[in-house]
Structures are given as structure tokens and as C-alpha cells.
Length: 243
Image 1 (cartoon, rainbow, N blue to C red):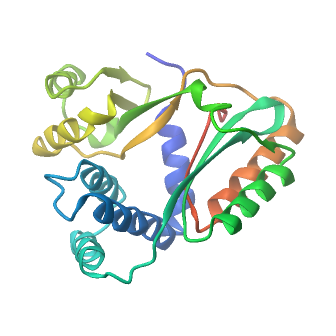
Image 2 (image 1 turned 30 degrees about the vertical axis):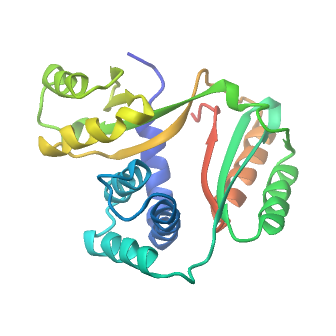
Image 3 (image 1 turned 180 degrees about the horizontal axis):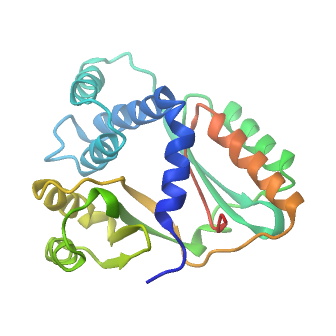
């Protein structure tokens, strides 16, 4: 059992993002395009695409929208070429932040990300400066209110499918996997008609850090908000324990 509610954070992000559902679909659409270009349009033979599809479904992206995105990426030789870029740095009080982006203009993205850090009284660091504080994991969050199954039965399904860890929170269940086992566990839960609040391969902090200074919280939120509004930014990971 953990005192840190992952679901509260997920729910907070969902509520914030619900007003910008189009932004989420745009982000996932770019990920689909890149995954198809790198590994082909068949998710059975393209693990990255299978991961993105799982993420799309967890965000309630319609199946026909997913299919259109795959077909467009597979058939459009003139599609925009997006590059993966990752930035690492520090927010106020040394909060570790990782920013993942897909961009067609690295200079623009770098300038925007640097500005977001600077305006929040943080700083961009060198590659690898904070990523060692995180573990790449498949993470599936299940809202207890949406799950009729017992914790023991749910745990057995997840572990039998290859999950690494199962934790019960106050309001949710959290399942962690190795990245390569994520798809099999996701499919096992899907086959058992288990509703997932969030499902993706993500970066999990090894330790969370609290902020008590109001100015530091305000500055960090400014950085996170600016990054969230940037169309090039796909994901932001940090080790701040939001209260």
C-alpha cells in the first residue's frame, strides 16, 4: 500500500485535459504516425504502435480515428517528419523534470522548453541529469468505483499475464509492468472487460518530493502549464508529490 495516490494525479490530469481533448488526440496522432513510419502499420508486429493504440483507447479515442491515423501514416509518403527529442532539467527546489517531444523543428521546441523552465525559476540540464531518478514502466490505473472484480482476482489476472507489481491504493489499483510486458497485460485486462482509467508506458519516479513553499509551487505549476500548452510536447514526467 502506498500513501501516494496515483489515481488522484491521473484524475487531475484527465479533468484538466478533458477541456483540451483535441490536444490529446493530436499528441496521440503524432505518436501513431511516428510508430507506423518506424515499424509498419500492423500492431501485431509493431510493439511501439501497439503501445500507442493502448494509450489511445485509454484516452477514449474512437477506433475509427485510430484506424484512419494508421492508414494515413502508412500511405502518406509526404507526411511531416517528426523527431523524438527529450529534455531533462530541474524545477524549483530541485524537482526533477523530463520532457518528451515530437517536433518538426528542434530549434523551436528547444527554445520553448527552455523558456518554460526559466520562467518557472528552473533550468535545463544535460542529458541524463535526472532520468536516473526514474524507471521506465508500463503503468495501468484502475478506478475502484469502475471495477466490480475483487483485488485478489484482479491481481491474479495481472500477474499471470506478466505484471511486475500490483498495488492497492485508497481509490484505485495500480499495475506495473516491464515495458515489453505492457501490451500482454493490457490485453489480458481488456479480455476480462476491466475498465482502465489510464494505461501507458511511462517514467515512474523512484522517490517523490513535496513542496511546501508557495512560491516554489506557483513557479513549478507555471513551468508545467507552459509545457502542457506546447503542441510539440508529448509527455512531462516529474517527481513532485502533488498534494
